[in-house]
Amino acid sequence: MSRNAKPVRRVAVLGAGSWGTTFAKILADGGSEVTLWARRPELAREITEVKRNSDYLPGINLPKTLRASSSLAEVMDGAEQVYLSIPSQSLRENLLAIEPHLRPGAIVVSLMKGVEKGTGLRMSEVLAQELPIAPELIAVASGPNLALEIAKEQPTAAVVSSVSLETAQAVALAATNRYFRSFVNTDVIGTEFGGVLKNLIAVAIGIVDGVGYGENTKASIITRGLVEMTDFAVAHGAQPETLSGLAGLGDLIATCQSPLSRNNTAGRLLGQGYSFGDVISKMQQTAEGLASVAPVLELARARGVDMPIVAQVSQVLAGTLNPRDIAPHLTTDSDEPQGERNIDDGQAGSGGALRRSLKRAFDQLRHGRRGPSGD
Ligand SMILES: NC(=O)C1=CN([C@@H]2O[C@H](COP(=O)(O)OP(=O)(O)OC[C@H]3O[C@@H](n4cnc5c(N)ncnc54)[C@H](O)[C@@H]3O)[C@@H](O)[C@H]2O)C=CC1
Ligand SMILES: O=C(CO)COP(=O)(O)O
Image (cartoon, rainbow, N blue to C red; front, side, top):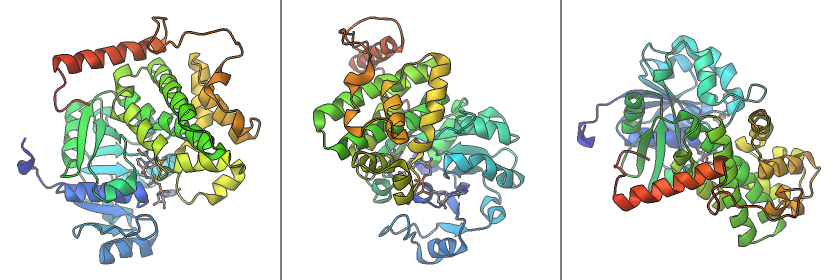
C-alpha cells in the first residue's frame, strides 16, 4: 500500500512519559487518530489543551490532533491498536485494568524494554499471559529511539516485530512518518531482548564514563557487550542477525553514546561513587536496566550463558565491585590468552553465531539482497 493510501486508525497509547508521549506524536504525525493515557488528569489536560508535556518533553510542541485523558475507558474506546509505554515492572498490574476495555481484534504493541522481575518474562510474554488475545495480535517495537531526539523530529528508524508479519506491517505502517521509519521482522525474542540487554551495557558504559575512563575502555565494553547480548538472545531462540540490526547494535550505539539515556546516566552516577539507593532517588525517569540486571543474570545462568560485563554491573549495583574495576579484562579468572570468539576464530557458541551473522549481513549487502522492508 502506498503511504498516501494510509487509512486513518484510531489508536491508544498508554503511558504519557517521555516515550509514550513521543510515540503518540509519531503515530499522530503518521496520520492516526491518537489518544494518550496519562495517569494524572492535570497532565492529560496540559497535553489536550496546551499540546505540551512539560514534565517529560520540555519545549516540544505536540500535534494539534493529539488528545489525552486519564480515563482508560475513554482512551481505549474503539482503539484498533494499543501501544504500551509504562515501566516494565508495572505492566502486569496495569493489564488487569486495561483488559476489560480492549476491543476484540485489537493489536497490542509493547514499547517497553525490560523483563519482569521474579518471572524473567519479556513484556510480550506478560501480555500473552494476561490478555485474552492470540499471539498474532501482539507486537513489539524497538530500536535506537532516544525519545527527545525523535520528539524534535530528528530522522530515526525502528523495528516492529510480531510472529505475524501482517501484524508487524500494520503497526509499522501506523508508526512511519516523515521523520520516523519502522522496519519489520518476525523475531520477537531477538527484538525484545536487544532492547533489554543494551540497557545493561549502557549502564556499564555510564559507570566507566563516571570513573573517567576513555574511548578504548568504552569501545571494548560495547564490543564485548554485543557478544554477550548475542550469546544470551540466541540461547533464548533469537536470530543472531536481529542483534546486529536496529534493535541490537543500533540501540546499543545510541544508548551507550548519549547523555540522554537514563541507563547511561544511572551508570555515570554509580561510576561517580553514588550508591544504588542514591541513584534510584536521583532518577526522575525510568531506567529499566537497573531492574533487569537480576532477572537477566538468572536467565543467563539457567541457559549456561556467560555474561561477565552484566555480572560486573550487578556487582557495582550491589556495592561489591569498585566501579574502577569494571573492565572487559576482568571477564575471566585466568590470564591465559583466550580467543575473541566473535570474529577471529571459529569456536562453537554464539560468539560464532555473531561472526556468522555479521558475515551474512556483509554478504547480503555485497549482493544487494536486503529489501527495503527488512531490518
Ligand atoms: N524514553 C525513551 O527514550 C525510550 C523508552 N523506552 C521504554 O519505554 C518504557 C517507558 O519509558 P519512558 O516513557 O521513557 O519512562 P518515563 O519514566 O518517562 O515515563 C513512565 C510513564 O509511566 C507512568 N508510570 C509510572 N509508574 C507507573 C505505574 N505503576 N503504572 C502505570 N503507569 C506508570 C509514568 O506516570 C509515566 O507516564 C520503558 O520500558 C523504556 O525502556 C523505549 C524506547 C525509548
Ligand atoms: O531505549 C532507549 C533508546 O533507544 C532509551 O534509553 P534509556 O531508557 O536509557 O533512556
